[in-house]
Length: 407
Image 1 (cartoon, rainbow, N blue to C red):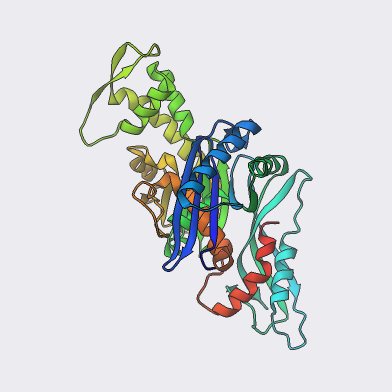
Image 2: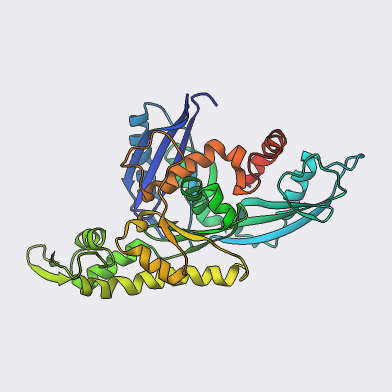
């Protein structure tokens, strides 16, 4: 992949971000970034086609100008309350005469795992193999070449509403771009902020955006549960605006500066402009805390409730990693540690060259992750079977079924 261009497009509720990377001498490097306000999206869903198209055009144009290249294909992030996930298991008999698992068998068993009861208005976004079982031997990462007559796979399947997906793709297409692939956003973010060891030990990724909070739970190297909560940072801004009787713009500044009102400096007093933009009034951090903390607790508890309901109780999780723009909220980490009872850190993108300090921020995790997914998807596909053991065989297998991942 010499100097091949890869572009990630994160169409968020607050902002649309395009990131362009090329494969340089030292690996993948970011060469262009473009941002534009998002006015046509609500909670991950298109509510205004024209506004969304304008945002995509503006963001990609800025990224292209910085990179000095033209972008044709983009990896598009998708989220929203319409996303659902399930785990499915499938089994096939191996077909070769010498009872050896082939790449064709692997493709057949993954295809078989996609056969689920799906309403007409839903489609599969990802079918991510978690592990394979050969003649009863579980936990196999790379079954190709193994002797066996019966091949099973455990697959994590992510589905989305066809209408919502079609509208996003329509906007991308009308902005003069082609979608090289659709990626559920927390999977992309995890590429940028989670370490392999964290995925192996067990981790919860929370990607808090403007309109949604995306969840991805990892164990033994692969995603075992993914979901979206339709609440993000914007509702916090609205709460502050209502509670302090100030504009949304002023409330956003208060949120960024004081967050949950939990600081090292004890109680503080600060001035806030009124709705008329001229008068000011004094507000204390405890007053702000009374507005912010209940909403933050509610969001985190909603996420935790989904995890508790859908993840086996005996599963050991090592930590919570929070990314997305919401991760910048001052005072968030101690609240999250209290809710989840786990060590918590902010996830910032690090696994790519060309990152400036401005880009090394949690709000860019999804866009940077989309680039990584696009560039390395063929070798790190599905977060599951990883490079290492049986490298050549894994690459052969992945090339065979990579095309099916976007089905």
